[in-house]
Length: 72
Image (cartoon, rainbow, N blue to C red; front, side):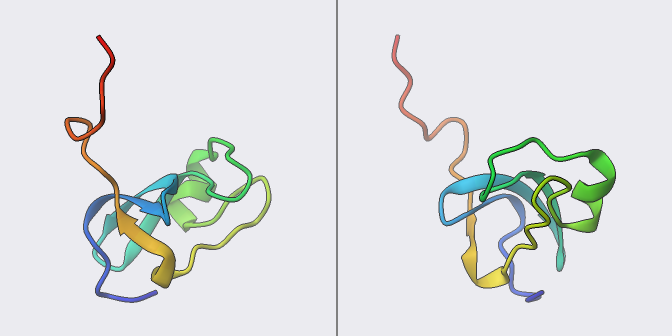
């Protein structure tokens, strides 16, 4: 995995959710099958459902919760 990852909340080209800590990714929601990941698989950086392993080139910073459009 690349060491030039954006840090904190990240997505994979707008899908899924992970947290980047240095060169490590904790995969919370799989961008391929959209399943919430099991904690142990998340810490390993792969999906426990479909075995997706993220590519560093697909990682993008996730928009902050304050950047999203909110309908009143």
